[in-house]
Amino acid sequence: MSEVRIGEKDMFETALKRFNRKIQQDGILAEARRREHYEKPSVKRKRKAAARLRKLARKANS
Image (cartoon, rainbow, N blue to C red):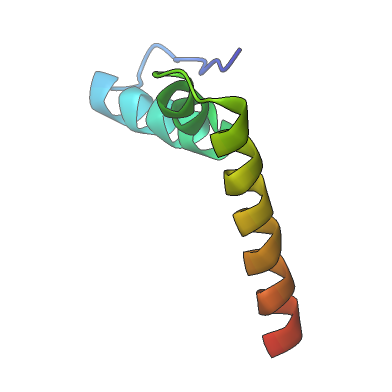
């Protein structure tokens, strides 16, 4: 669970920005978007295989 401590002098906007940044870094928003709709196992396998190929291609280009 992501949490941002707010001091007495902190403004709401800055606390919200820190919270949004923390959510992005933890990958919670991406996970929620991914789980929004059901993904068939065959589609999931294809997505993972494509990600693995992209990673190998990146390593080969470096």
